[in-house]
Amino acid sequence: MESIDNIQNRKFHEVFEYITPTLTKSFQLGNELLDRIPYNQVEVLEQIEEAENNNQIEYEDYLDLLPKLNLNVGDTQNKFISNTLIKNKNYKELIELLKRTKPFDSMPMLNLYSYARSICGKPISNKEYQKINADQNLLKKNTEQYEINKPHFKNQRSEIKF
View 1 (cartoon, rainbow, N blue to C red):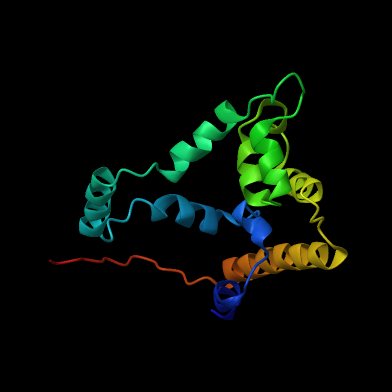
View 2 (spheres, rainbow, N blue to C red; view 1 turned 60 degrees about the horizontal axis):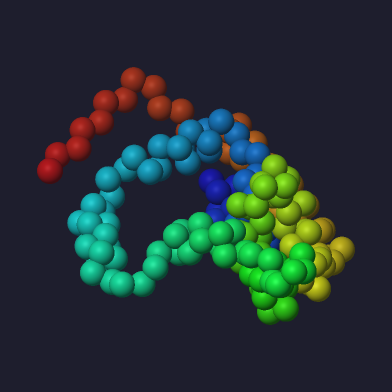
């Protein structure tokens, strides 16, 4: 299980918040089924109740509002929210805005990430590209290694008693 430890203990590049690496079928199935595990429903219900009592706007609602607030300033073609994010060099929020804007929503996420960083004045360096490629290769190699060495369970019955 050394390959899983390599994946869990590594600090990956921040671009992996936006792109999903290609994983083997076992990992894809595991990620799909992960949401179905009722691990702590009481805490989730408490968080929902707390959010209902809180008057702050949810982050997802805020992200949905960004494109609607990105209006032209005066008679110019300058967009208010885009210019503000670029001035503040906030490329993460800019990525979220561009993901919801028409010509950019069909762009691959790695290209959109690179574009947002470059217009904010923080282009991706060669060292960062090397880190991204190394992380992708590590994920691919370790998931393939796991597929080869994964444990096989045959005719095993399990029971969970509460």
